[in-house]
Amino acid sequence: MKNKSFSATTPQMRARTKSVTRRLGWDIPVGACFRAVEKQRGLKKGEHVTPIDVCRVLKVSDERLDATTTEEVTREGFPGHTPEWFIAMFCKLNRCLRDRVVKRVEFEFVEENK
Image (cartoon, rainbow, N blue to C red):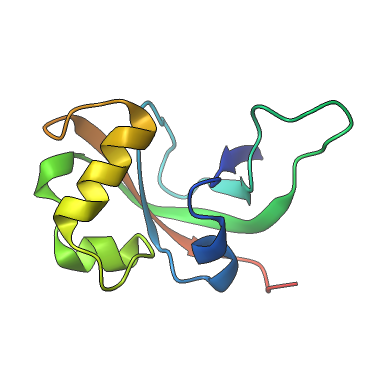
């Protein structure tokens, strides 16, 4: 099972308030499971990957980032924020433009919270 980092949305993943993620370069099939982790790159010597939860992919699609709606921002774990805010945050974190086509991955949690 592959690890997928949720360093920017660790609190949302821990609270299970996130059911969609947008990514650049993800290639994951529907039905696949992944282990959500706090981070997997940039670990200092002696640090280990910290698991959050195990998730199963329900739906995968390509869409323009600037097509993100208020409902989708909520599903990303940011209720009360605007699509403009989310798009700006995503672009800053991923160094991309707002018209970029991204992978939208809808998922469910498959293990009990610890």
